Image (cartoon, rainbow, N blue to C red):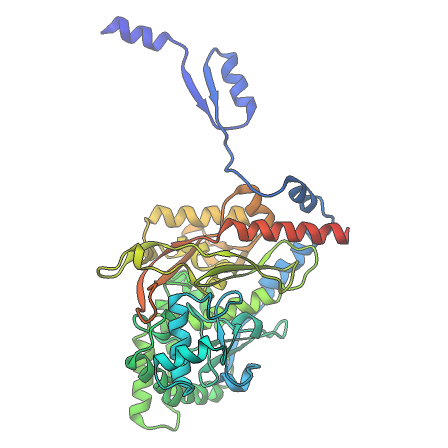
Amino acid sequence: MSEPLGGLLSAPPAIVAAGVEVFSAALRAQGADVTDVEWRPPGFGDPADLTQLALDPRRATANRTAVERVLAAGSVLVDVRPAREVLDLPDRMLLHSGPPLTWETASGPMRGALMGACIFEGWASDPADAERILAAGEIALDPCHHHRTVGPMAGVTSPAMWMWCLADPVHGGQAYSNLNEGLGKVLRMGAFNAEVQTRLAWMRDVLGPVLQQAVRSRTEPLDVKAILAQMLQMGDEGHNRNRAGSLMALRELSPSIVEVDAPASDIAAVLRFIGGNEHFFLNLGMPTAKLAMDAARGVPGSTMVTVLARNGTDFGVQTAGTGDRWFTAPANTPDGLFLGDYGREDANPSIGESAIIETYGVGGFSMAAAPAIVRFVGGTVPDALATTERMYQLTLAENPAMQIPVLGFRGAPTGIDVLKVARTGWLPQINTVMAGRVAGTGQVGAGLVQPPQACFEQALAALAEESRAAV
């Protein structure tokens, strides 16, 4: 045994080197057998476009301006009002999540939500009637983002739905979101049955009016950004885990709710509904992120992403330097955990505007703040920590208001940079619930998903084109 082993140890070591060339050269000089491997993840994009953006003299200042606006933005709850009063909605228009779509291109859950909204508004008597008027083009469809609005999953917003009305006291912006229905068979996941209609009617007739009176009676507006910051230190990540945030919102609003002039049974029902809905805060966190990202909209030369949004068919990206222009590609299907007997074949491609949370640097970007989220979306605790560490490589700054305790209270990775995404080849991480592919199914699971690379390839080319024209 001693001679073969001695011979093995005396042979030059075989080494695989993943690093800069100087290390390989030093090892070879010592007689080692060295095999070099590519140590960088593969990037993408036209080299000429990458060079154009890298050398754009405006980029550093523009990105600094965009980041400063995002970090400075505030978010306070100022009112609760019906959509018809606060949004520019023509007669018979429905808003939806993600980039523009048509009835013909709408996915199953999007169709289900649109049909359910038509029934809720009284425009259709039943699902067949709703499908008929939608297919005939009698109902106009427009993205929520075109109306300073964000809605989770299908995001369908109709005139009679009540809206959270939030304002940015720093930049003067406004943003809106409808009220969260809870989980399971809900409109935003494409369900439209009698249970869904009954809940929507109660939210219209009871929940909305009670919340309006409660919010208006407060002596000071609710600081929603402060709640979002605090919940990251209490085990939430602000997208698929909102337990602490929902409880804090209930704590802040309940004294005003109990003083509303309404039947005791209605007050009890409202408190019971909020207390039993762990995602109640999501629809407050989303417009908070929207306010921040809108503050950076329209900064020439900036390569920062301002919108990540999905409509169940396409994924859409917008950037600070290209304004309202959409860069779209077919949405990916999430990987994760499924409810009951559902499987991947039952899941619809990624849908929803809740990815505005990740655009702001929370949610999937801050999974390290909520390791328990992996029990809901899949993966492991080390995966959650590694994901946040990786997102720092794609972003322009750290948000000191959104601190992550397990990382030594480091600020959340904020300001996705198209150029960094292209250079590294890494894509932003989003955690999400999954809607059933078939209209009317509702939720089938939760998991993780990334934007299609093609969206960033298009954004990179457009930003480079804008740069050439300007410089």
